[in-house]
Image 1: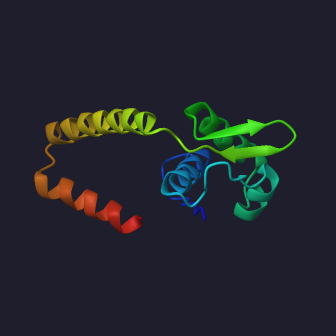
Image 2: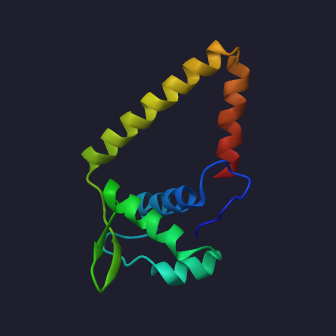
Length: 122
């Protein structure tokens, strides 16, 4: 389901959020499917429940899940237009990073190697 990398520079809650987002977008978590409870996912990943709660809050703010008081958090199938908007935002960030890396002397070969390395992690 979700794997954590303690060598990753990103905070744990971001890794959890990104892992759950990937599961929702891929369809592994269907629209309306209940996400694991904060406590059960925290126990499964051996991390603090507050970390899971923060990841769920971020997902809810981004529209990937909705919290139903007393019942839990449920995956939300996002509309295509929302996905397109998010994709454009991410592409803009990538372009900005690529521009900065090129300014620091990174060549095409290096950038392609980074992309291939990231593909191996998925």
